[in-house]
Each structure stands twice: as structure tokens, then as C-alpha cells.
Image (cartoon, rainbow, N blue to C red; front, top):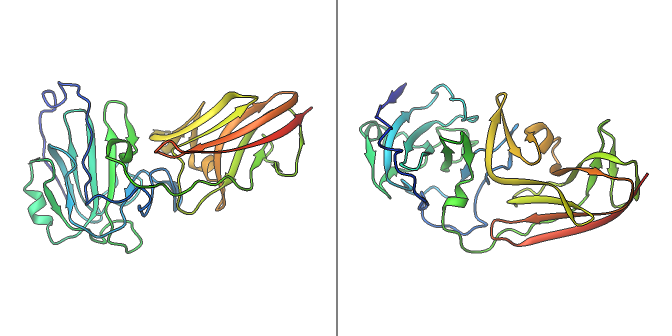
Length: 287
């Protein structure tokens, strides 16, 4: 069952303004999310920010309701997970917000919504969406002009500490799929490599960069995700899909680099959303 409310969006998007969102639930500390944007989630890159508590859900900004979804609705292009009961709103800055995994109790009232104010209650969390039985809010932001999924945290107030980032078990993978442990391998053939580190179960870098002899070789950012050929990807010097970002249960891609012949200092830099950095450097002789 799906109910769609149509509006003329020309006037809605006529003014370009700088826009920030309020929290869709009560404010929580930076390190307290259940699932971060961009994390490994099942067999995909998470396009959502999932909160940790079953609390009252409210709109993050003034906007128009374009869709109210019910459980088992057909999935839409950008939404890779089952949203369950959800409310989708659009804002005058061309951003769209999605409030998913809502309870069924307030669903009839949601069908009557056409325009919402900042902080308008939408009800409580349920287990209608793909949350493995957890009654937790799944929140998405989509840039309609750029056709990208946006990390909601870049638009919300931030406070508190981030979970500490770690750089462990760093490996380099060549085009043939051969894996080299950079802690023990000090000689490599020159060429292109994917650089991986151990994936942390909770902490998620906002940006990962690899420097070769002090120059940036590649950098992956987690402020937005794009969809290419039906796959959600993050961007660096090219688009990286789930299969490259998370090739197995333990590894996460840091960057792709070209290692030239000679002695090279290879530096991995992870940065959290508050700007704190974690760095590790290797010296590799390439032949």
C-alpha cells in the first residue's frame, strides 16, 4: 500500500539557501549511533544513519510530504534496504529526508500529512523495516539535484567524542588479487594497488587518504554516496562499489594508489567527522 501526495516543486526549489537539519530524535553523542552512514551493512554500503534508541521521531526541517510508505512497499531506486513504514519529505534546498522503520500505530495520521514544520512529531520507531527486529529510526538524506545520498551528520549539530579510529593489518592488493601485508612486505613491484585496513565494528572514518611521498594519491570521502549501474558507491579518484570497499568480513578500503619505482613513504590518514586524524606510515621499496 502506498499513498503519494503530489506538489508543484518549481516554487519549492526556487531559492538556493544554506540549510542545516535539526536532529530527528533527541540529540545524542557523536559516538552513539547504531549504524553509521557508509558502514558495511549486510551486503551493502549503508545509505542510512541508524539511531540507537526508540524515541519520538520528529521532522528535521520544514518541508512537504511527497510519500507515506507502508510495510512491504516496493523499494525505490536509491533505497536499497526495506524501509518499512516511512515518511518522505522534500525541502526548499532540493534535499529530501526519509524517516523509516516507523511504528504502525501512527500510520493513519501520517497519511494525512501534506506539509510539515520543523520538529513536527511523526510518531515512534517500530520494526517495520530492515533493522533485524530493532525498533530504531533509519534516517536518510538525498540531494535531488546532485542525485546523491548525503551523510546526515554533515547537516546536523555535532558534539561529544568520536569513536577512536585504528589502522591495523594494512594490506596492498595488486590487479591479480595478490595480497601483501605491509607490516612484513617491504619490497613490491611498482604498479596499482588497493590499500586496505581492518574494518572496525563500529567506528567509521569520515575520510581516508593515502599519501605517496607526501603527495595525495587518492582519498575516499563519506559525505555522499552515488548510485552507478544500480550499485551504491563512494567516490575517490573513481567510484568504489561495495565489492571493493568491503571485499570480505574483515577489510575496508582506504584508497587505491599507484606505487612508483624506488623508495616510497606510504602514509595512511584516517579522519573522523570532527577532524581528528589517525596516521600510519610505511616505507616500501618498489622495483
